[in-house]
Length: 141
Image (cartoon, rainbow, N blue to C red; front, side, top):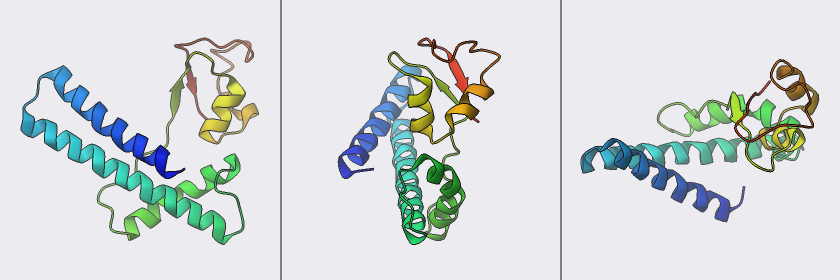
């Protein structure tokens, strides 16, 4: 992930925390706490991403390959903890909501899962994997 992507994630997390706080009418102290928590979570994710890339490079793999992402999650969590990151690294996503333009193949690549496994995990709710619709919830294998 490039620095521009990371900066965008940082801004997005802070903006989301502020919007969430405004939506529930919390005090400015609570808003600051939510923004701090969002910044901490972003910091933890950056550490996890760096650890995953480092581990993949150590064993001669491309960290962006889908099969590498899943295998490196545990190493990334351990490395983030060893680097002094407070709290747990965010757990992997278990479900995803289909957005306009999404495809099963694109979702599989985005989340680093096997396409056949994604299709198999959703056969009960997606009878035709070539026809998914915005708003559908897919389970990730």
